Length: 512
Image (cartoon, rainbow, N blue to C red):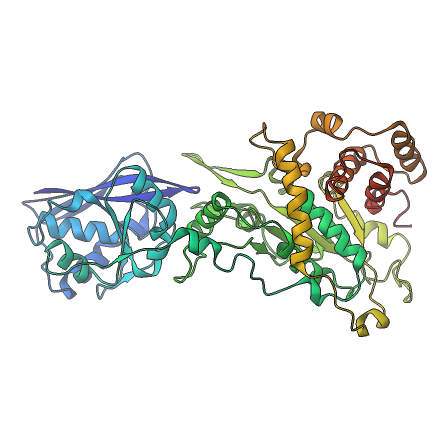
């Protein structure tokens, strides 16, 4: 007897419907066809044990399982459950008339219990688009699937429970999630707050500008000056995720298997801080079975690289293209996948190996030329993509001991949101342009017009400070963001002057 069940394969952050065809006929062998990988081929042992332990009979006949379309590679263990249900239906142990209404996914243990899967959200979206009535999946993943409107999500714990449902001996409980309530829950709740940071007003100002215009930023200063502390608080002043961004971010984390059973929708911006020993593949994504890397997990959020010169040069260089294109394409011989990677890069570094170059009180003990060599670990093309270079100085005792309350993240965030609203109106007719940092050179010339006095100031600054030509566009973009924060229609002299101040590493002789 031939029976069909339905599941899905995840490629990138999207899913594709897979039909699992099971045919039982005279004979004794078990065949799995349709480009299965080893995890799928090994399903026979798991399925046979789960069926037997659950009180059913594993047929001792010829079983052929085809995963269609047969020219797409099937990976992972999440096909166990639909294969088991297909075998039970094909052998007449459960009726098959309801199977066509449901997507079924889950990994089976030998005792029949069902283990969680990756990518439940994109699979649920695909099931809904294809007109399926419901989605039966592991209980640990059910909240992810339940946020998709128009699809009934059923969380199950074991094979016997699914079989009882199709035999109409037991009803499965549909899990419902209020997407709006889930989205609004804890949207403004953060563990960290800028109010915790004493002093460092100039750094807070730089991060406010970075958040308002989506600019990448690098913090340069001695150890203990507060670089990491400030970077951790940057997500708290970024505008809240909208529902579309929240869904896109959740899909990536679902595919990577990073969502807990209690999560259904990510409602706070991600903050990723990989260690400097990270490999190229772990950062940008890839592998034999391509998975999203840290830059994709930071999509719509912040990627913080602490001690930037300590990262391998190859790791830093692979970021150049994603920083420009805001997506990363991973190509393999048979297929290619694309992951979104629109993130704010925040990097920190010591000015030299000992950490005390330019320190107001401590002397640098590095040998001549060492500082320049240390800084040269970061290539010019990468620095070219970082708009704000901010020098961080240690906080003095008076500021640390001060009882004056610092400005809260919520207050700063309200100013950032207003600036972003101005940019939304400015770029309303450009669907792929959302904030100032994304402007092309052509757009910069159009949007960032400056007066004659401004041109003279910029010319003088570039000559006297030894600023590079590549700094020109960056200065104008940042000046436009500063003007937006001030609610100014035009880029004024004071906006340009402040922007020029954020180009430390472009100055000739900064590293002596």
